[in-house]
Image (cartoon, rainbow, N blue to C red; front, side, top):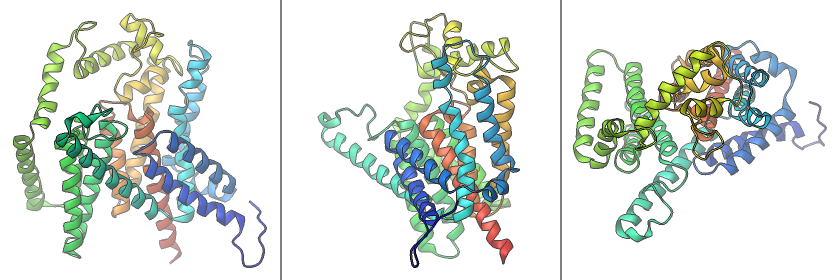
Length: 414
């Protein structure tokens, strides 16, 4: 890109690059709070980055599996429009959920170029801290003045939903614990501050707004953290401490006990078309989805077909309100419209991203935690196709991956 600048002024191209840095910060700051603001900021960020792209930047990432595979999934989804038999509007309406993956290569390119990842992650953390404070404050207000609950169906969830909130807080817990462990021998004060922050986020998850998927994710992430940071008896001590903490939380949080034990009751009491429960419906979705996939295993039913084929399987009108459209499993959500080919591409992308972040350092651990969260949560939800969780994955992986390449380039130049 050619730019002309007067003497003593910053070239236009450099200004756009700096603007893209701050638009990325604004995007992740808005993500826990707003859908519309995040959408506007993402569009602005993509437009600015596209205006600064050059051939050399593309050549440097075009052979990376972590970049190529998201593009391959997006291209395949577009091709799948051809063999879908639903309305054209439904086919094209389904594409944004997958096309968001095209932003991952742009993030790799941009943050490999600038390395300005710290403001992005700090901005996201501050945004989560504000959300945490708002959550505790809302809970306090509702406890003191029950009639003030107003529009908040979930006490302690000021915006969006408890699933996304507990998901963000789970990442904050694990990253703060990682920093506490890493800085323990360097600065006890910093380590204790990080530990205190982790406790506040964790307490909110187990006492205020529990996402059951987040509990599973957090358990897996804690084990990953233990494996990476401890050896031998220290790992055993870490696991023992987790067991003690889990027992204490179980004894002191009736809300958590209800959320967890209610899973069994939900499964037992579920009756199709009679008694609807979250856990029971999820198992029913899985059963029907497996049967659906068996009928078109290789390339699936085509883009935008999920609601139509699931509704037919359940014997309901796909145009009816509340008709099934989500198998609540990421692999099944990929398999129904895109078949075995789509599933292979999805798993290959996850593995490529895991491999990218399997290296020492706090930045790599950020990426590893985000990818692990998406994979584990994908057992119970199709988060990659959801707006909030999907864009969190895209920006988390893209910023961390691009920044890692930037740091590697810096080391090679030394």
